[in-house]
Image (cartoon, rainbow, N blue to C red):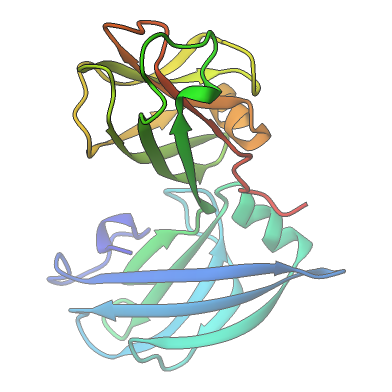
Length: 241
């Protein structure tokens, strides 16, 4: 949460104001329960209140979930939310903000976006076609965080590997089901070193495939240009059905 995301633009010297709003959503018959935590620092004064509002990025919207009034950093709580608010959260249409006396309309704000973590092990036995050479000890791990932004998302990832037959000349995310080879969809690195990290925007098609479990990661070497180790990405859960 930052002042730069707030609408309308807050007054005063608030460039250093920061905050985080994290929550877990548990589905109920009528909506969901939001279990939340709020932290903030460097505000222009005491936090008079904090809420979850419903509106797209860059727009102000009505309060739908009161969080605290007044608020202290580190505050926690539970709130029942209806199906409309749940739908807004899942579609990038809700935000949390903190209000002060200087900025009663809001001093810092952050869009509430679904986030999911995943991790997959890469092995030669999962690769299609079968790799050549002594690859039985080749290993890898691909871990990522997907943050949904409406119909698109941000993917932050880290790739590690060891005991390959040679240098990792490239790594990609491919589209494909287990046991099937598929096209490259997201280039990761070329060449690659173990421990490499990245962050990228992914489009609606890639996001849908990640949510459906139709993606895999592999690492390519000179000995095995089609791929030496591979791991299927299990369905990334960003929606509550």
